[in-house]
Length: 302
Image (cartoon, rainbow, N blue to C red; front, side):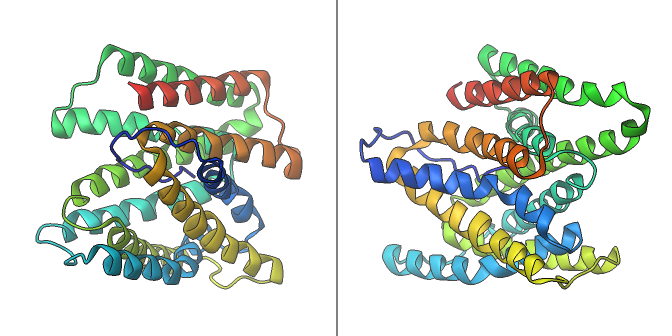
């Protein structure tokens, strides 16, 4: 699943090695989310619920520390609607991404999930009148071409066409849902602190996921110790630790470092899936993945 994206002002890069390592560690934690979902013996929506449930206490502590340090005044008028929309969009993102892992490879799900900047740019263009530059338009075309290369091998075998295309389609849907989440957070960010937005939106996401899991008749409770460890790792490692470390590091490095945050988790997912599940990407998929990651870098710099 896509890494958290923060809209931060550019700041001079810090030479501190410790902060850079925190940035890489946080992005790595997020990159393992697909691995944890594969080990969780619950349904896709239920996995999303447990991810939020285990992360909520950490997010609550983060909000409390943020309030104490900055003496924030809570949620300003007009903030709750975009925060609620952010929680719902993130819930859709989590459910679709988790579901995609049952039909496609972790590499495809993670790389196609990196199409979220495409949705953010298009959404900003259509909703806020933010016309993209030629560089950004070129990046979007490159990303679309890369996505085509990832999906193309599915047409080579009739048996994998329906399920494989479904998985890739779910991953693309997750990417655009995450783009909607980013746009909603952007709207709420000047009306509430980031910690409060994270806590409230995650709580709404948890409610959405458990309702979806019950409605779909999914298995809610993990059936094994491995399953419990997997959902706990989703919440504590991928969500709370990953997002927390990235937020801390980006506060020192600025927005330019976000390129690493966008690209590194996908690379971690591909390599981990190759090592653990022997999901070796084909040459076409490798080229498609490189194209998408290059497009993400262009978007972040454009």
